Image (cartoon, rainbow over all chains, first blue to last red; front, side, top):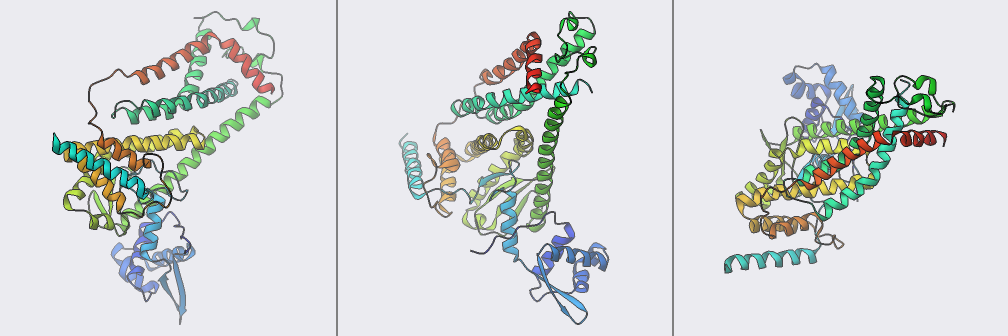
Length: 134
Length: 320
């Protein structure tokens, strides 16, 4: 089973946008390309985008390699894995922070064994019969 | 400042008393949970006991000391033996314990631990806010409803001032439009009942509870708020249909590898509750709340009446 990546927090708005951009660019991107795609629309400088990339790299969410004089950044964690891990942390699973401020109607961590499922199904069938009989 | 250490020690004694009372409260809530609407409020009340009991004891002693200095009650300080701790704004400086700085050490340690727990809670709350902000940014949709690209069936509501309802793609794909409306109605019921705000308050109150006790209270809270939200859905869509939806969602998940708790754990308990007749909405006497209020009042009067015994006890605590 692969190790569950810990999601470093806090991730700022810009960091998330940069991550989203890099997930959509499987071949990777330079800081300049990321700035054109994300930074210009937000009105931030190339330096700010470079800092965000550096922070994400230090948080082990990006990998990078050098091509001539520029670094090429790639997402080190797939979007699906990142999102699943984030949801688990929000829901307070795997010994994370307690989360009474989250109201979950249904949670995958809460499964029933097949015998209990059968018993509950029988109880519902009985109730349906009572309703149709009355 | 000279009185501070004595009040801190009194607070510590009150907290210890609360640790004996809270399990009784939990036991009461388990066996007689009371009307559906009142359950979460009662759980919050039990959670607040380790705050309320020390506060009541301190308030009682502060009121007594104030009454003495204003001449409303007989001042008997001069009859005390030297070194006897005393809740008195006037004579305390001359009556400090002759025990070195031990009392300051106990009070300082207590305050530091309290501050540390509060800091840990505050840091955790900040971390959770950052995660929720990231989750919202990564979800799809606008407004209250957000969709998460996750194949697991999930539905939950969370957020600070602007809460959202999060539904997973896996859940939406598995449900009919009517069932989707039922899920949204359930989460909307949480928002209407302000369960998220109350949940944050609950976590703050639980700072003063030891781990196992806090976990039991969290479980009770979760059951109470989920059953109440299920009831709102059942009123609109029918009890059996709501129970069927929960069972269907349970079936869509991987079966538990080991037998679940008696009655099927949280989900089983909720389905069982839906298969019972609808609870009556008759107003009942708030017996639980009255008992808690009476207990606190009795503590206040008792602490004031037996303040000498209390002072002796605190003195012994410091000497230990």
